Length: 368
Image 1 (cartoon, rainbow, N blue to C red):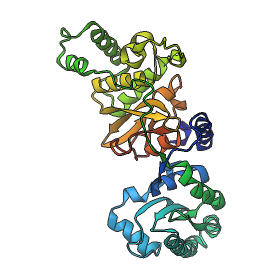
Image 2 (image 1 turned 90 degrees about the vertical axis):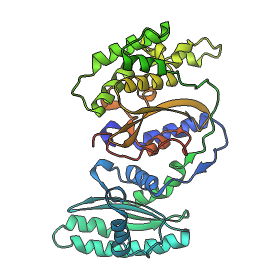
Image 3 (image 1 turned 60 degrees about the vertical axis):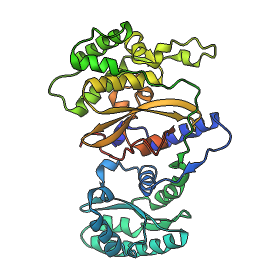
Image 4 (image 1 turned 90 degrees about the horizontal axis):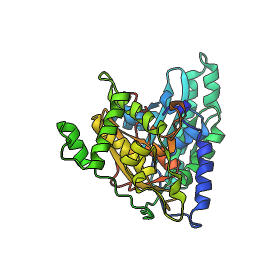
């Protein structure tokens, strides 16, 4: 995730708090965040570092190497952890954030003591030839949480990082998803359109589907070139969808006068307006026609009190989240929901069926 393409976490946290205030007075039940989510939040809110600059050791190294690092480098007891996330700068930079999930607060405290010993050893690695980095390590700390996690906080401002680490359990917890059911969130059936696209024969389509196919084909002719990669195709389609339509404000009309086509690709392609399901299904249709794997996620926002829909895209075997509705009329440099992680969606008030929807964990924005 590239920080210059994202608003700061603090801004989103304020938005989440505002949306929660507009919803139910009682906080919905939540699931505990993973060690990776806690580490992610600690880095973004407590260290102001882009993940793209760091090595996610828990992803780049095999299980045996990670076990060696935890036992021989960090000094933890073998098998004392159930989940781990490690981000480090490497080279001559000391920056290193790790979150190790243990059984309980007592075992987390013991793990934190081992991490404190590691900090002393690590300082010696930089003493003499990298005095600035040695000073950063010297001022760093290890911490633990009541939830049973231990944290290594080698960074410029370990106090702020510790506060973020302890706050992550509330901020990164996934709100239990219950479909609000206020809107009909049945995605438009595009099977016949895609079949006609693949065969080149649209004679069997009804009038609306034929119009959708013609308009979608024109969009692809406008924005795609044969030499584009899947990521470039996705970006071009996302830019067109978010830049050529607006949110249908009639959705807020309590008298129910909204055009029903705002829920499907016809409304966006023909009228230039849609609601979330219209944006998501249009984006998926264009992606399907461009032969880039994409799904529509029907979920919720506002603490699982408002229906919402967005997309997930798979590039080079990795899943990414994309929410064209919440990026509408924003230029690429202002996109906040293009190829982001599931953690980012959690932080920005998205809820979904966590058991059946794939988890987007890749942090390269689809550029790798």
